[in-house]
Image (cartoon, rainbow, N blue to C red; front, top):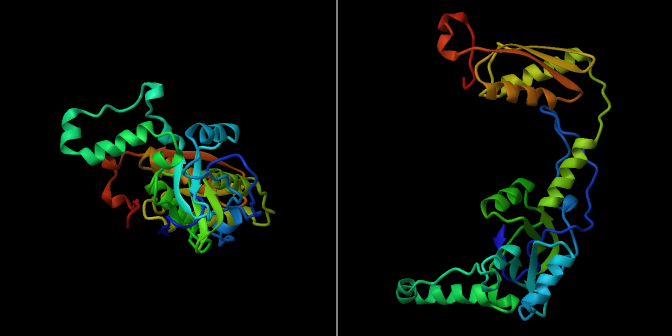
Length: 272
């Protein structure tokens, strides 16, 4: 991942065609096909130039349902990005920030930039510079971390100075739905499903060890036994739901206050 002021378009969140591969449904314990950026990214972003007027850029965003526009120079190199957030604090909306005299006196450069940001008439005057980018080799989890840390809805995928695609939140949602809707061939026995759930529980540090009894019949898993918080209950149900071949989960677990558990009872907690 790099700061890439000279690679093509940055983030963009819009309704457009995207390519997704059909991927295997996730299960808690099996090795699944690795999802990568190349398979889910979007191509063909709309761009504007620094001298594009704000009214023209805003019209493009409205007409094409965009929340951001990458800004490129005449050579197609990325120089910034304009988002709908850059348009919130405007005198036309009576929302421009006030620049107090003391702030103007003690921080004139910051005040001047703030003035331009709120009143600029061209994209280049209000855009954000130094856009984050990823490559097709960047692990998807790292790209998502980047989006979360910097609170961005999209990140450009580049190779050198060339833009290859864009990874957007909508791409991630589409990929998620693709996986969720895939139906696996159920070839495992009910005993195997119960065993799989038990093995997955034993791998988790937070999960109660040995206190939950798992059975399965016709693809319906039943969880019984003591648990020590509502969070544990929900997490164990979700774990079972994500196990390959499980159609639904029956909750017969009973909450037990940990303060009332006899240490000599043999009940094992997580985190061991």
